Image 1 (spheres, rainbow, N blue to C red):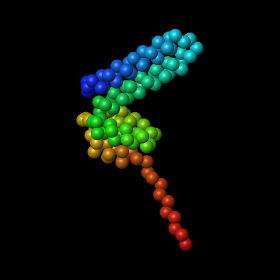
Image 2 (cartoon, rainbow, N blue to C red):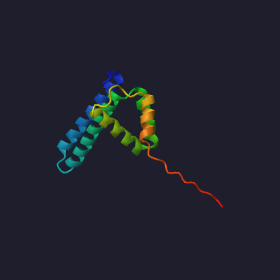
Image 3 (cartoon, rainbow, N blue to C red):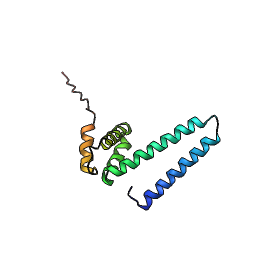
Image 4 (spheres, one colour):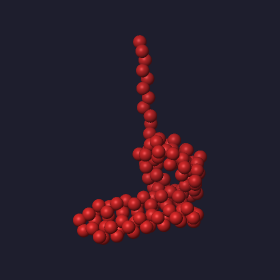
Amino acid sequence: MSGTPDDDRLEELREKKMQELRDQADGQGGGSNEAAQEAAREQAEAKQDAMLKQYLTDGARQRLNAVEMSKPDFAESVKKQILALAQSGRIQNRIDEDQMKDLLRELQPESKSFDIRRR
């Protein structure tokens, strides 16, 4: 990761939360499945965020976060696509903001246009 104090603090807080969820899951016999699922989801989300930080510049991450605020489903599909590209080794350098704009345009679903004519 980048090693900035904010990133280190954020990672520390995530680890602490994960440990609390694990402890809570160990303490509860019946509800442990739900807590384990929550812990697994949190861990997967933290891993996804770490990989995105590795492959995206700050500007690209900000653009993706802005898209996520307005279109969460579309942003999730873009994240999955970026991670798939990264895991397959097709991303050589970090994706900058201009490349993110191009990627968003490519992945944007075709908009349906309606042409209404009055007679």
